[in-house]
Amino acid sequence: MALSMTDSGPDGRIEPQFIDLGTTGRGASPLVWITPMPGGGRDVATMAGLGVGLALVLVAILLGGTLPPYADLPAFIMVIGGTAAVTLVSSTLDDATRLPEIIRTTLLHKVPRPSDAAMRLVALADLARLQGFLALEGQLANLGDDRFLIKAMALVVDNTTPDVIGRELKIELQAIQARHQRAAAMLRRAGEVAPAMGLVGTLVGLVRMLSSLDNPSSIGPAMAVAILATLYGAVLANMVLLPLAHKLERNSHSEALLHHLTILAAVSIAGLENPRRTEVVLNSVLPPADRITYFD
Image 1 (cartoon, rainbow, N blue to C red):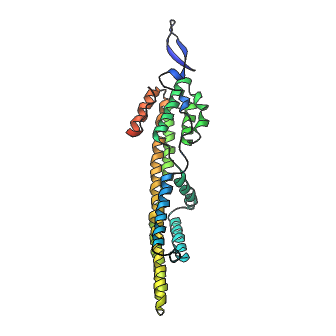
Image 2 (cartoon, rainbow, N blue to C red):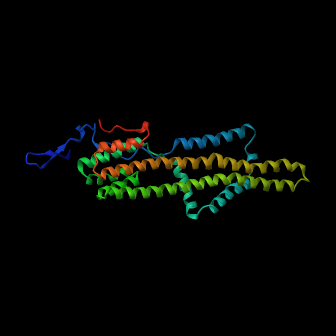
Image 3 (cartoon, one colour):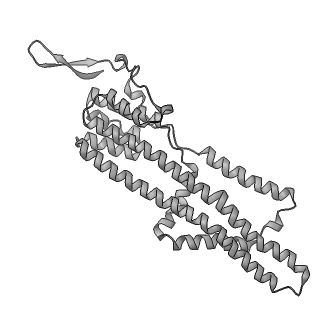
């Protein structure tokens, strides 16, 4: 049950009336939708793509011979170490130390569906309309998967004005996007450097090969080792670093959409707009395939 305000009574005063949340045309209590999002976990597409791509390269190598001729530690160290060093020159130490965690998040993080996020936001607006802003405070624990949403609802609970909420959340969203852009730029820079470092390794190998021309039997193996550096650089760039950079940018755009929905909903709730209006506003931003129908 929830407290709602109805039309004026005979004496002209607003009379409160309790409403059954399950029979208001919503189909269910808004609490049904205020739960942790069904996101997270491993991103199957990213993991499967990397695994299949590297497996195909390995199978192609084994079909043409054995694996040991394709293993060369100096070439591997030159490509990996050189790529890391040049990428560090192009960025800061703080960004570089965060890169492993960024890569882990890109591999494992699964962005929730916008429609699920929108349903939860409208449910929060519905709850605030029925029980007041303080009712949102009791639901913050159920929003633990989204720190941005927790901050937005905390601002609403604190009775912050809609203009201030919108301004503060937009500033934070810009900061989040800037961090994502720096991380993606680092991965993209590493993807650009890796083939060049492979070429450097090849040149080093060619020098070693040319220095032993007096021994014709060593020319073939030395040439093969020199080319391996180019192979390592091409595989690292085109099958790992550049795809991860693109995936991070895609995840950033998806999360930005979710945060934008949160901003619109928080401003709407703080402005005491009808939850049906909140639903209309969110649907105007969502792609057609993700638009929701919360109210009957």
